[in-house]
Amino acid sequence: MQRIKSKEEVLTLCEREKVKFIDLQFSDLLGHVKSVTIPMQKLPEAIDQNIWFDGSSIEGFARICESDMYLKLDLSTFAILPWTTDNGNVTARFICDVYKPNGEAYESDPRYILKKQVAKALAFGFKYFVGPELEFYLLKRDENGKIIPLPHDHAGYFDYATDEDSEVRKDMTVALQKLGIQVEALHHEVGSGQHEIDFKYGDPIITADSVLTFKIALKQIARKHGLFVSFMPKPFFGLAGNGMHVHQSIFTNSRNAFYDANGLYHISELGKSFIAGQLFHIKALNSILNPIVNSYKRLVSGYEAPVYISWGQVNRSALVRIPRVNDNKPSSTRAELRCPDPAANPYLAFATMLATGIDGIENEMLLPYPVEENVYEMTNEEMLNRGIETLPANLYESLRYLANDRLLQDVFGETTFKKYYDIKMKEWDSFRIAVTDWEKDNYLEKY
Image 1 (cartoon, rainbow, N blue to C red):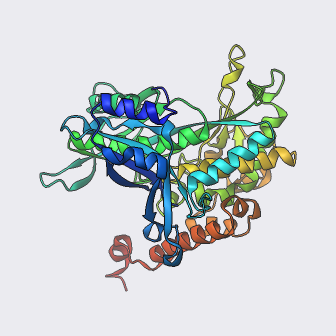
Image 2 (image 1 turned 30 degrees about the vertical axis):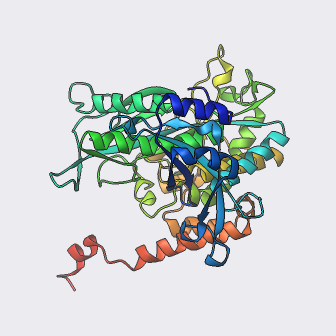
């Protein structure tokens, strides 16, 4: 889909497609999509004069005394929501930027935070590209529509004969393509009922928009099949968790600056410094890339989870992996950060990943030697001797590292950082004092 740029184009398309309603979408600080709907006849006014709303009820936004804000429509994000075309209430959507009454961009708008980091990178001559891979589970609903906490099928990785949901994935792909998201592959994942649909890498702002749209679209299409999509990082004990591996590269003057024909794994010194910056900040960065309590049920040492702070190429236990480089296609050179999960706010994730990578380039940080052995099989002594550390074990530990990382705090800004930190500490405290079924099963009769 060609990205719309003018009011006239938008109104012409809406008339042609018989649009009746407009959804104005934006992200709260945690990455949850918020939306207000207006009738089609209000769209010209909304484009010219914006839409005002009360920001005090949005997670991580304004206090009651400073609640007036407005949404500015990004016309390039116009799309028809394909699941609304069957009942006659055809609805289009725009993704919006949040502004304060004085006309300044709202500092706690996650999209604005990402835009600032992209602009800083461009000032260095760097154009950042990302390609996330989101995994998800399909779950059944009972006759009352309640979610049944069991996988929908019993197929495994790339299975065909036992894959019950190939047609569901195809319907999802059709919807994504109608929304302008270029799908590259779709397949069953490792876990029973687990799936993945990959889309083309690109500009981080457009890609973050696509991540939010991706989640909404998949949930809507699953509902039409009587199913539910969950991006929860670790929904089932004993089954694979949902990750969001992110492929990254930096371009300068239309050339992939990560590529060096003579470098180790064909990675340039700039690329190595970028990776080194991310590894240097990774313990604090993890509080943004793996932002909920459940994230750390996926990131457990001893399992096939990316918890070891290392890098390599053939080693899939490494935190950063360098996919094999095709010398005939150097533009595809990239570094894959394997720890993020789909609970992350994509705007904040890409903003902080970019900032820490640029920090590595600015300070010419050096990478340690790559680790190509299977870290899962190393003893603690071997890991200690190799200098291989692990990610924080829980959300609290990650937040404590974040509290001491000045660079990441600067990415958020003082006010927004305090909001994010306080929200996440409250989440941890709520979890910390909860009494779980596991505790009751193991302790209730014994003590």
